[in-house]
Length: 335
Ligand code: AHM
Ligand code: MG
Image 1 (spheres, rainbow, N blue to C red):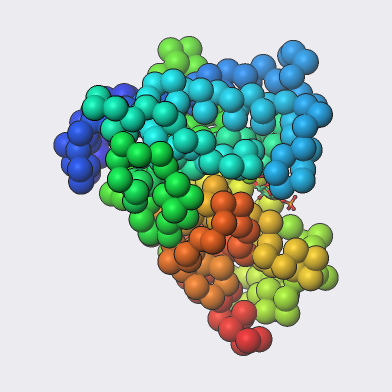
Image 2: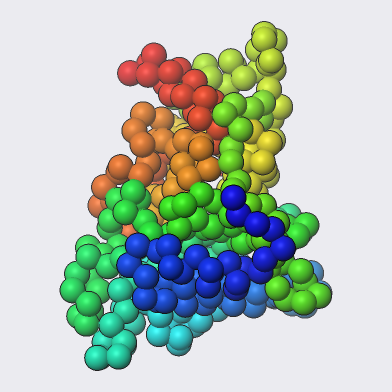
């Protein structure tokens, strides 16, 4: 049983001994993310005050407009992680290629790589709705002391060492797992300290919230349409409540606390859906499973998929176990 009243810094130190190959490196990495989270939180909070909202003029590798805060968050996370020499490689949703960190010598034989979506749900920034950062950590598979390769980044999600998110919401929270349950920490903005506020977070086995962009309904596969109709049907504990923030981190966070399912299916206009396997689906799937939930592409376990490219997209169904299983049943009926 995890005790409350403990800071994130204390929690990381206390749990270092339980990490499988404990050398303090993962602890330093988590501390680096904690620091970057506070910096980005500060920027996100003042977005309405200063001229940092709006388009930055760049287009990211997905062909979407980047907001200034996306650029900023991307820079802050990369800077913090690379300058502190705690990782050997970083891949970001906002960068076309992975970054190899040149710190290989006797002293700096870093073995972790980080994949990050620095500011997810960024279309919500200029309307003052919650956004988030998502991170995923792996041990490299190529030898330490050599430059990282693509192979280090294309590992199946089940090999993640840690994953988490920061939600910049009514409160700022950092929620993460190192494979031993999910812990949620809330930032006390006056002190700049994260406190353990949500120990051992778990999805209820089932719930009554479904989160999907129903505007895309006509483009969805028949199985998904049928499941949505099932959610809306007046029977047993249904109709369910529809809640869609359009910010994966926030929709996931609410569903984990209240019980629900998040869906971003494939459609006739986006054949693999929208979400990225490496930066969004894998870390959220790891968290979901660690919180007794489930995550699939509609058929297969997300964490078992073998990535083939850095910016690959997959359909995503994630949340309370029984709800994801029910959605899968509807999709299987149309295969
Ligand atoms: P982003 O990485 O460009 O912000 O896109 C990911 C976001 C998710 O947070 C959210 O659930 C989804 O895109 C919303 O997409 P849509 O507006 O198509 O429903
Ligand atoms: Mg994103």
